Image 1 (cartoon, helix red, strand yellow):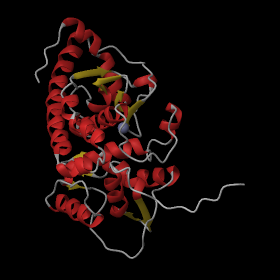
Image 2 (spheres, protein in one colour; image 1 turned 90 degrees about the horizontal axis):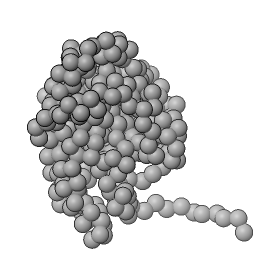
Image 3 (cartoon, rainbow, N blue to C red; image 1 turned 120 degrees about the vertical axis):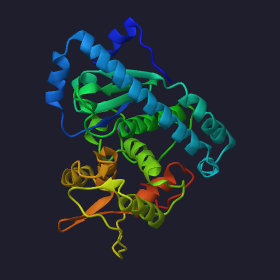
Length: 320
Ligand SMILES: [Zn+2]
C-alpha cells in the first residue's frame, strides 16, 4: 500500500485529536514523552509534514505485514474450528476482506481526550483507521518505545475484535465490567479486550498454534529467548516446571505492582515490548525478587480466545 497524501490530508494528519468515542481501545504506556511532545510542537509545518509522510509510509508497510499475518491466522483451519456455528465461521471468513479496508493512518500530537500516554488507539465507529500519538512512537529523529509493528499488531487485534462483535461473534470471555471509558482506563492492565490484543502479538512472536498448551507455548517462547529475539537487560529468563499452580489472573493492584517491576525490560529485537510486559503482569506471581509468569494461564487465554462454548461448572444458590 503506497500512500500519497493530498494537501488536505496532510493538514488533517497533523491536527491534534480530542475525540471521545463510545468504545475506544488503545495501547497505553506508563509515562508520557514530554520531550518528544515539545519537539514535535516546535517543528515548523513543512518539517512536520515531511516527517509525517515518511512515518506514514513506514506504518503503511507495517499495516500490510499485520494484515498478511492476521489473514494467515484466521485462515488456519485450527482457528476456524474454534468458532462453532456456521454463522460464526462465515463471519471469520470475512476477516481478510475486512482487514483490507484498514488503510487510514491518523497521526496526532497528543492522545485522545488529552490522554498523552496513549500510544495508539482505534474506535468502533471508524474501523478503517488506526490513530497514532506521534511523540509516543517517534521523537522527531528516531522511533522510540515499542516497535510500530508491535503497536499496530495490537490495534489491529482490537479492530478484529470490533468486527467480530459487530457481527455477533464473541471473541473472548468478558470477566470485567469495562463499559465506561473510566472503567476501561482503570482496568487497563488486566482487561480482557487488551489481553486479547496482546495475545495476538505473542502468538505471532512465538509461532503459536490456536490450541497450544502452556508447556508448548513456553517452549516456543524460550526458543525466541535462545535465538536472541527476546532479551532482557534486567532478567535472566528460563522455563521452569513447578507444582505450585497459579489459578487465576491478578487483580489490578497486583498486576500494576508486577508491571512496574518488569517495567520496559522485556525486549523484542532490542525494542521494549509493551504487550509482553503487560500480558505477563496479569498472569505472574512473585517469589522473592523473581517473577513467575504462568504460561498455563496464558494458554488458557489462548484456548478461550476464541472458544465461548467452553463450559464452567457452578453450584448456584439462589434466594427463594
Ligand atoms: Zn489496547
